[in-house]
Amino acid sequence: MKELIKYIAQALVDHPEQVDVSEVIGEQTSVIELRVTKDDLGKVIGKQGKTAKAMRTILSAASSKLNKRAVLEIIE
Image 1 (cartoon, rainbow, N blue to C red):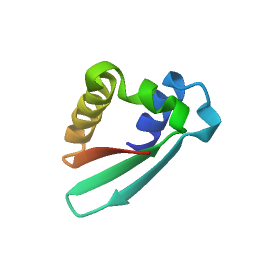
Image 2: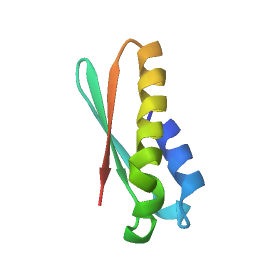
Image 3: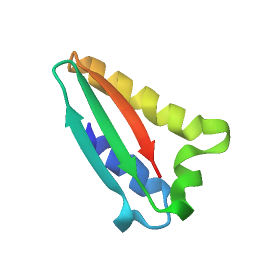
Image 4: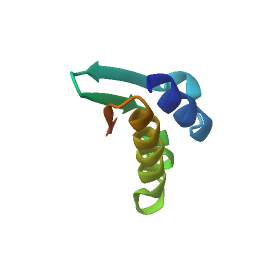
């Protein structure tokens, strides 16, 4: 899951080398934290949050295949 979010985020931003993704794994839920530069934050969130929502939808679909739950947190 971590690699999937990193791949998507790096394709969206101007500074792909500064994309940082970390994962906190629980028993049933994984929290994936995405950090980008302040300049790229708008590109990851998108207009009215549509890009972030799409990333969360893809993450949810991929994690359901593994019978887990994953949550995406975008951190400034």
